[in-house]
Amino acid sequence: MGNTDLPIGIFDSGFGGLTVARAVWDQLPNEDIVYLGDTARAPYGPKSIPEVREYAIECLDHLYGMGVKALVIACNSASSAVLRDARERYDVPVVDVILPAARRAVRATRNGRVGVICTVATANALSYDDALTAVPDVELHTAPCPLFVEYVERGVTGGPELLDLTRQYLAPLQFADVDTLILGCTHYPLLAGVISYVLGEGVTLVSSADECARETYQSLTDLELVHEQPRAATRRFLTTGSPEMFEGIGRRLMNGFVDRVEQVVTVAS
Ligand code: DGL
Image (cartoon, rainbow, N blue to C red):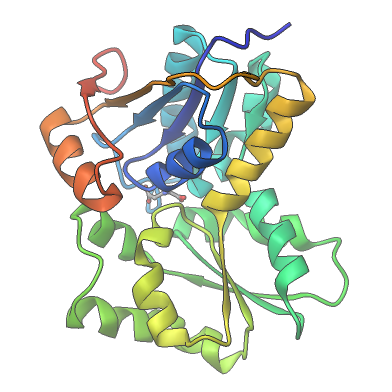
């Protein structure tokens, strides 16, 4: 039996999961959240699946140990590596980003051609291919965008260099005539401006952040774990890296959503 008064634990390799955290906060404003960004070991995208798995389990164990009523893996790369294990390991709902976004893309596409941009780890794990395998008449085109995460982690979301890179990354998807694009890394909603500038209005962007927040809402509501009455909910932010750096970049990227960042010393070497 879950405890309504516990916070929702949200985890990502770094800042990207903050897009999910903000969507969860918007949709569940009466719920406390505790966010852990493994910035000391980000990016996860270029790492092997076993390595990502080890780091992700450590972070999830840490959040679970603090006491949470749900765990949100706000990272496609980590979801690709640990989702199944995590669902067996923890006795609280574990929400991921991949399935909810894939489902939304299926509903959104008009021509059946869906693109996904993601990290190399997510592309190699074929996570979106698996999620869409049983869906007829949908053709998936995958484009890994390995350098995007580094731009976001530096707080850079625009400028000619990024625009040029975006054009290069998205060219194969434009050639494939996709009409729907899954932002298959939680860092990428922070680059939605440059992505839609390049693709134009005809392509629908599906953010895994919004979809994951919706899934979190549904899961907690089904288990009757949401606060019914309005209350002053709290946000806590933990990082395995420098709290000052996390707070500075986090605040800039998320317009003040991030405050009071604490360092986690029990995770990461
Ligand atoms: N935000 C993460 C994702 O959704 C990973 C980014 C990274 O650390 O490479 O895949």
